[in-house]
Image (cartoon, rainbow, N blue to C red):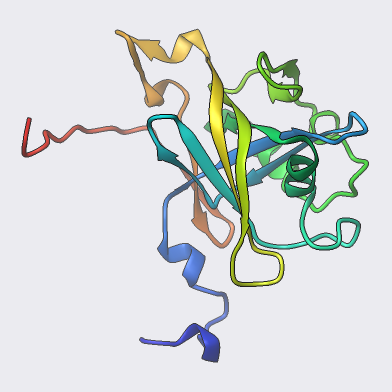
Length: 201
């Protein structure tokens, strides 16, 4: 089939987000100016540079109590910081719970029963048992086409790595099975890894 998005696809569900898969999930923790913690997953997320290390995530809808965006973006606009928590397969249910469009006064850490720890370089909470957490300072927020589509870029200024996922000086993803988004309500876990030599090795 072929379709132009502006004309619709004619299928039961939008196929677009099921085609670009798997997508890593950034479990974004923020804190409002009132001290309220927030935690929400975003599957439009990735690393974008090595030096300095930078990441991005996109927020693509709004909540009635935030006008033009969601709690995560609103908090980052106000404070200039956020933390990206890496999601392990074991945390899938807690992550899913935090994906709800809860009111801005809901603390998702408490609501989902997630233990938190303080970040080291920024005033924000992180998921205590996450395989890794990336403390970030805001670089820029860019609005792209669409009323509530914002892309947030951050510089990673601190990295927490759980000791048990390190093996021979490297991160071993099979030790925590990263969770990935596939589309619709589908997810996948990474539990099998293979290597390929680069042509210039």
